[in-house]
Image (cartoon, rainbow, N blue to C red):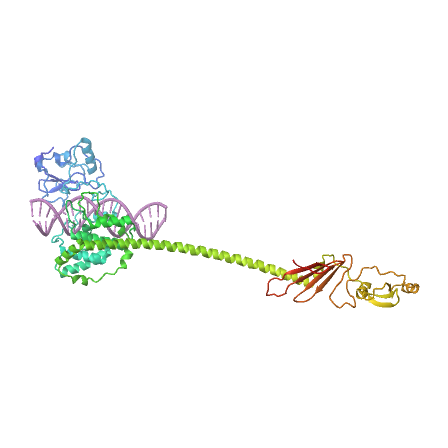
Length: 555
DNA sequence: ATCGACCCAACGAATCGTCC
DNA sequence: GGACGATTCGTTGGGTCGAT
């Protein structure tokens, strides 16, 4: 073991130890930390500076650990592992993880790194999951940033953290101008803040003020919105109150907030006053409105930016601030603002009510249209039925006209009429007659005028001459009487005295057709119809029936 | 529907300048 | 000199969008 007082060591940020040789040069020794695959270098024993004397660490090293020169002292490679360097093996460090584990096992405290020792962060995990945490190499997130950092190396000069030199505080006129611009633009994203930043920097150049970046303006505005209420009898600052009003306008512009009364009331109450209550759980309005500003970029385009020149023509900033303060705290203005909000809420509810009524009316109209269509369909069906009935009646009537006998007689079809015959009539009381036809027809035409008894002889009969010579034995014809072909009947009247004993008469008048049925010997029925007019109602069919007369009856 | 890459906003920590 | 404010950095969570 070497003498501690003569050895000066230094461990860089990566854990690589160096020692100061006799020539005053810093020489790395021990295993390299990054490659470090060899396991033989882990030597037991204390490896940290705690075992070193106070003069072990000299920072910064004179020759500089960042410029480690090859080990020319003993010809041993820097990564050659254990060497014959005259150094206590206990000073050879383990790899970082192994050294920590070994120290933990032995109950030792791991050596604190020199680099970053001034940082006071404890890197505790934030309960909310937010906040800055110490970066570790194993973390996989934000690969892009991490790769950039790793590729750039540790020597890349970073932008100095903290407040920029010469950055003055925001003055009232700057804040007033910023709030004016925010009120005009009502930014919903980075583009809106860029517009505000451009305008504000232009204003700053004209008014010899510090030019602020877009992000600075945005942070300042959001800091105002996020300002919590003061304790005690605190009064709300004018800029905070105005920022809250503008924030409400931005939320309204976004148009994504739910229009609920509770929400409106809460928002108004919370934004207009700051109470003296010390309740800490009350959140600033901006946090409650956070969802409202999400993804509404398209709306932003529709809002043109008013000319800022009108804003610049205002009076002095102090007077403007005073006016705004008095305006904001004026009870009349507050009452008017409250009335306006109430009116907006009422209008929204009325619009919703009207929309509901329109929807109901539309449904009613649809129902009535359905009913109307159903009624039309029923009417058309009724008309079709009426047409069919009328056509049936017409067909029936036409059929009756053509073959009325068969329809009316209800008898089997009559046999064809017998051909007319020649008869020789001799009357008992003297006299003779000859006719061509049927004895019935001759009787109907002559019975009334010649009631005397008579005898008929068929002249074409083979026995005519014999009977005529014998002086008319007196046998009236007994064959069925013919129905027509009476040579002396010129009317359409037809008589049938066959077995059934009825007579059917048809009057072919176009307007008053008439069918008369006479049942021998006492009943006569007449079937007639009304006017045959196609433009009128279906014709009624009548039957006249009477005992020795006529009687009309509707069929 | 799921997954990964990417973007954005919010937040806290750290640092340093300004102001009283 | 201390409090406060401005700025930067890093992280997280949520949303969007395209690929699968």
